[in-house]
Length: 270
Image (tube, rainbow, N blue to C red; front, side, top):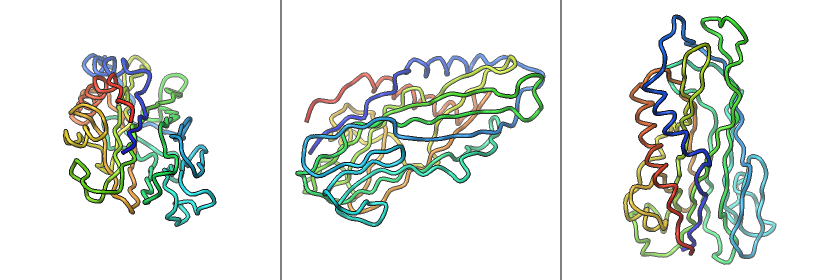
């Protein structure tokens, strides 16, 4: 098994800051209830292990495997990869304390490839978000936030032979461990503190069993998801804005604090 790290977001302390702001949001006569948002999600960095084959790296696609092979998003099976697809259009309306607004889908194309090929080692995902207040109309400039939210993922390219050493739907599922870091951030607009969070709407990302965490080379309590060999697994992302400690925001904050503790533990080398 190759054990690979996509490390933690740099601004981990903001998770705790966001938690405090949830409890201390100031009362305001007319808090913003509706926002326009524009969002762009890109890969901003990646590295690969030593090995043969070739790699594709751009803002929305990462792939590895056979040189000259067909890219997995084009139906090829001799390369694996990750692809970001922004929602169309990559903009819309989101409500404070309302439902999650969709932003992007990241698909893992998990094909069985030679162990001699270099595989993905690290990558960083960046979401650039702009929020504009629209209701009620603000007293001044409606531009409320322009910020880049960033986090990294820990990817483990497993061997394709049993025993896997953890519960697996295939032989053997690849593992993604997410160091959530500060996926919850806070900002102030016209005297009110709001919290904006990156969440998943597809339900893929959850606490992983201890054996799966161990297979990834980390301690129990890690968070992430697994993807079966030979399948394409999409993970849907969105943004959630809160001004009060809603159950959804508090739940996400709890996961963020777990990620904060986990992110300080680097995995042993393969």
